Image (cartoon, rainbow, N blue to C red; front, side):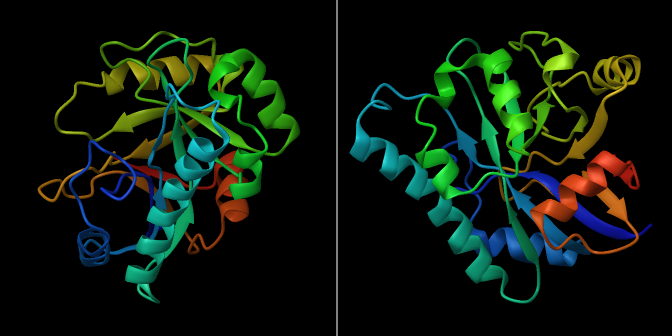
Length: 219
């Protein structure tokens, strides 16, 4: 297995905590030998989420960042859409795959649902949900039955995500294990993701691969 896919990446076009441009992401990941990058910009609660125009602008911003990165990548990288979802109840973050723009537009209450109500809906609708950095300071332990997987390696250099604890937790729970660079800034080199035998070229293929277990973690 030698085909590299990044599962956790942010760009400055939608994540306020990121200072990395689309061009920077493309160069960095192609230089590192990746074929696919999942763009997982933050999608967090805001005070104006109940306003129709504000919600549409929020969703548009998420997708505009995806379009910018896709255009910059051209035929050099496959860019897949994801998000780092947060609910209003706490500061936990969840990597989500399998939605589209219409899905977000039709679920304006998603931040209010909490992980319990959300996961029932998500599984029925074919979404895959991975808890990101579950043991980083400030996180709340989530019942592993309420997620499809756990990020057992998070490469963010500015945080101690207690990856060893996350690995043990995921092993005990018997859930999907993932790895991600949690890329934010120009000085952060890719150090996470998965290795597969074939390139990951669609979100549906990514979900099937993670469910199958036919991959190796990059740590």
